[in-house]
Image (tube, helix red, strand yellow):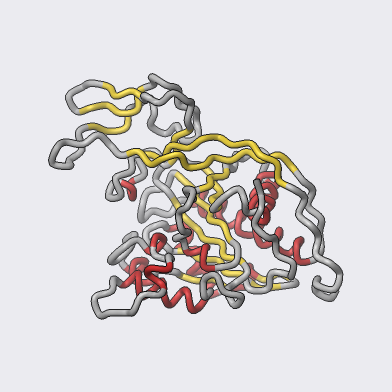
Length: 319
């Protein structure tokens, strides 16, 4: 399934972005720390740039000020004429596009790693746009091998025909880390440490690639978006039920036809009526209530990832 071109030059321009959502505290605090002390992000062939993506939302510990920054990196926002009525995040997306892009240009950063937390029981989730991205798939596999005792499922978020809209899509390549469960506005030491270690492992992988390391072919498992499912609602749009206790906290677990998914306020259960087994994720995510998403339905894919060709000696950095 991998078909996007792989880098043929060392990755020199790398960014680590935190605080894209201003109340997801692991990324916020790591970005703030690295802005003061960036030495941890240095490798022999490159030095990653720390970026606090949404400083105004971070300052008030909110997800965003006017609109979701991580849904704002589309051409319609990035190329539109600026107006005084633009939400802060639209202006900020254009600033970040100039700093780290421009998107889809040869001058864009080589790689962006974006840091997120979720209130859902997602564990350590690696998010990429699609299975066609060979470099991202090899990076995800590398992270899985570094912590075999810790499941690191891969979520492919992009629907067919959908334009990429996340901050990491500004760069030539990128992924996001999604760690949970962690409440909004709260910092947990275990998830903070885990995210910090994962960032180090990502930078180590890029260093290995820059030095000309071979990465063999492998079989990959990942979860791909099927559809986004809303809560049951009244005619006025109010909630009429909530996530069923048998589904709550079971992210990435199989959901069989006929299993309960919602518990209505009148006491009745709503069952999953699909014909195929699916794998719900972002179950009862706090930030998705406003988006009309109770969970995301995914399918489990298994596919072959070809070997990642080593850089030629002429393109690797001098020893």
